[in-house]
Image: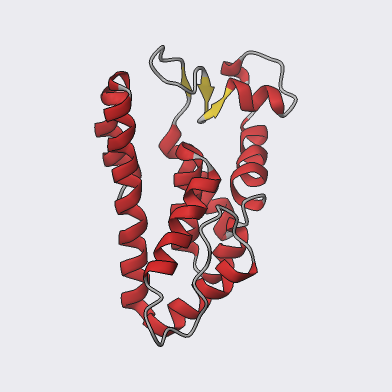
Length: 180
């Protein structure tokens, strides 16, 4: 199994099967794929019957390849998995921005990389910064970056619930299942 397939399996496992909670802003979902995303990808049937193979393709295309997280996986699979998971819940551009913000924040004087601009797009500068940061800081750098990504993810979940109290019923689960 490739690193990307494992990431997608983990997301599907975390998302679960069919859901249609009236308070969930994503609406009706299957495997975490919203009805809007399923329709945008050509699926017209009942969400309960969404093929797992289509969910996998949507995750691969929309949440891994298009945002460039497959290239992040070539550098570090654990960081890529965190970005994909965050991207599924918050949008890939937000996940990419979190990565760019942390890499820029860690770009102290003498750092061997250029700080990426937080534009929400993983491109050559972000990938180069990640690669050089991890070589420079090693295992501790990976740990710090992972903690930082989880920290901003958790903070964003709290901000969502503060802005929309109806989402509070999801906060505990988000923290237990999405933030390490």
